[in-house]
Length: 418
Image (cartoon, rainbow, N blue to C red; front, side, top):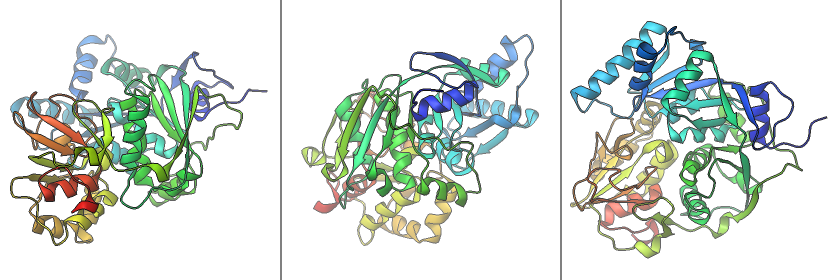
């Protein structure tokens, strides 16, 4: 008889083909899916072609490659790396997306299943925990090994439990919640740990909220993030034509490294100040900071729910004449839905710049790059020094509502103050 286990431990045990695992154990695991994007795939291909004595792919059906970071190409160098990725995918029959959106949004829409162990060559792969999957970011070498063998190794992480109660107040969003948590525990507060979210408060959060929360957990150092696949997650899965692999939940007497109790009703609008994601303060402490650019999009906040919030604030208003406001849907599916709902008309009439579905300003290398001493308020994932352009620029992170309100005002403000 096995002892009690957390969700993270159960998924690793299933992937390792064993009955029980414990934090600190190292196990060889079968990887269910392998996602890679144009940030590093060209390096993986180079190693595959030049370093391996017997290059082969263990199971091509497990691979999903997505061009999303620099779309459209910004330079001949980028064009060459995209071509390398495109040609290799075609030659080997790899599932391939180009220009269809951000990798994590595409994975959630089309591929992720509860109970899977998924490696992604991108740190925000932990977003997949919103569907009860163990998603974790890996580097090129680990990705290549798993691609060639179908296996890898995992050090079983300890788990931090976040017990959510209550409900977010009007004008407060999941983005504010996860930034609050990151500020509370710090950028190293979950280093190589799983962050598991549960409690009655979780049931008040929709799938977009859940993806937003899990996606940013790596900014606290987390190995992965997990939520039990409840009726909300299963309805999303059914809507997208998929069935779970496993439906795991943590045992009642599972051991956690620490348990945090969080009342959603106490959360308020938050801003993360430069140059660290855990440098968080209540948004009211940043009121009046002049901005040059605003960005609504990314794998964290580019879904239809976020665009609706932006549209509600922009309707009947104009973007400040000295502000560039880039709005970027997370996928073409989101883009089309925004079109059908008339949101794009609102954005254009307000003077916003609507871009194709891609990483855009969050990645900071192909669209909306900011100059020296310029200030950006963003729904992107990071605000590190130089993240969005010049090393002497400044990035503030906030919810879609705060970003949209600030774009109208010309300085950081919240929607209720417009």
